Length: 329
Length: 145
Image (cartoon, each protein chain N blue to C red):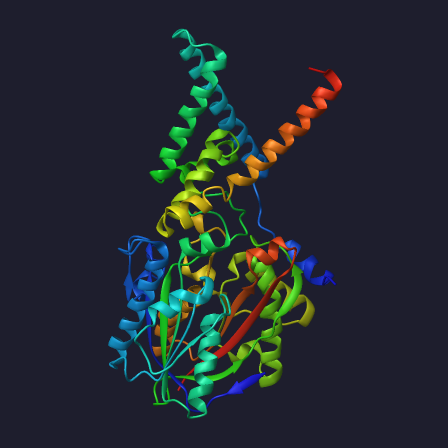
């Protein structure tokens, strides 16, 4: 399912990060960084809420609007009952939608907002996503201080919050089209190899996007996936080459770009989490688009749909991938 | 139905793992902890403490050191360096309990620490007791009292 937009613009972004992202290669593109994972709060959950608040304040400041002028806030994160988004967004906007698409939430939120704006129900929207390394460790894996050894295919949840401001007022970067993903089940079981679990969703959405739009990889200056990590990235490239004779030469993965994989060994295969794709796109990629260094980007945010409970009940890790195309006007 | 073509291609892009190296490091670090335990028992022996009495003291010392280093936040870094050699002995058990408690300290003593302390260690205790009972029974049936 592909939508086309004529009147939706990405005008501003805001990115707030934790210490690991600050030490990564994209440091200078972030709006604000913290040196400590607590961000001055008493718990990691509250720290994530603070990140969300910070990013909302930052985006309103950067786009020169107040909280009453925001028509809609769409937010998603990894916590149970998406509490980082709901507590963090309190008081902002005339309406709020909480979404869960795991790490695909960033693009999912933008697609929902773009559809609202295109259909003229609203004039503007803020899409926000957040994740915190420690809260998601606690949620999905072991206690935060446990430090259980992880295999090299494991990815590292990024810490931060990121917002994008979408409007119907003409600007430099517009949202051109979007392809909604569907749930894919390739019978994957290993929560320590998310790249392998989510790569099939990327392949599915990417092929459907090319089919619907009659495009090929060359129509984009850059194709970006959300958080597959180095191994998942190679799987996508290799599979498309062998099965469909598609060469992805202009392809990269946000999880690989967010950290310096050689220096920051603790991230293993790369970054993950809803904020991972948003931190890279809303900072570095947004900057490149603004400077017109790249003209058209296809962003494919990937999410693994599962919970520890379903894994213990022997269910598979399903995945989903939503794609959005950003274009310089 | 598994997509065999996908599995084949994905298998080519597996991360290299250093399992043998990890096992060797764990063997060494676990061995060092065992030796340290012996050293503590020997030292206690010089104070006229019998081996039977010295063992629980040695274990308590290890539990204290492990829990303290978890609380001070460097046990997880040590685990990354010395692998499972630190997690299998009693130090790992103490670490599992302390790290679980720390994780839930903000939810209060009852709903937080109390109900989550045994999140990881609970299984060890339960199946430890069950297997002790099982092997004790076998031992009784074969060898008598």
